[in-house]
Image 1: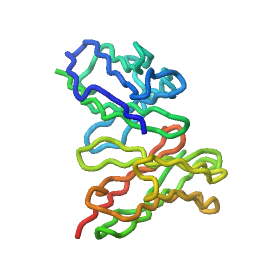
Image 2: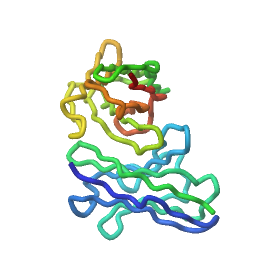
Image 3: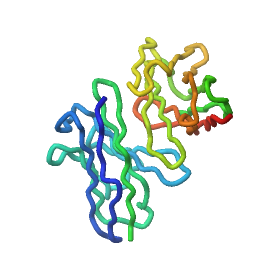
Image 4: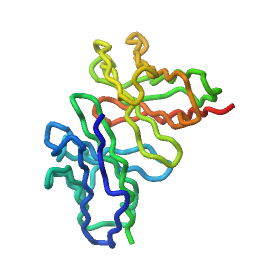
Length: 109
Length: 114
């Protein structure tokens, strides 16, 4: 089974920009992995921010965007707010079998 | 509105099995798959498997293959996840989610303890 890799932790200053990445042990992440990005705050259910690599949910703040970058999926946060401090997970699809990354703890400080 | 309502918390002894339900409403149940995801305390999310609610086709994570069975009852608009041979490592919150992860159940805490 594939292993999906994320940065364990990242820190961003308020108003700053940060990019979280999501890599696959099987090679480059492509649009065919139908990448999802989730935000999870302590004690809460995960919430989808991005689906199918680049698409936003109706509730996704405009400061979040998804892309493919250097063979990985990427989630970019531009103009970080204190409320963006959370755990972020990516999810990749391998012919319908999904695998979560280990999560990135994002600190806004 | 779409809702996924899960069954209540469970406590099991090591070696036992648990079956968690996920009742869907607000949409045509057979139109979308249901995923099952778990999260141990303080740990990462783990995808366990999913069922096509229309034809019953299933896919499972290799980690849980042989121990997990996902089924559905279309007449009750309910999906089920059964996990066998439980150990303390299976103590987790178990979530169901609809096919596109737009809607999630509230989570079911399963505690495995002797």
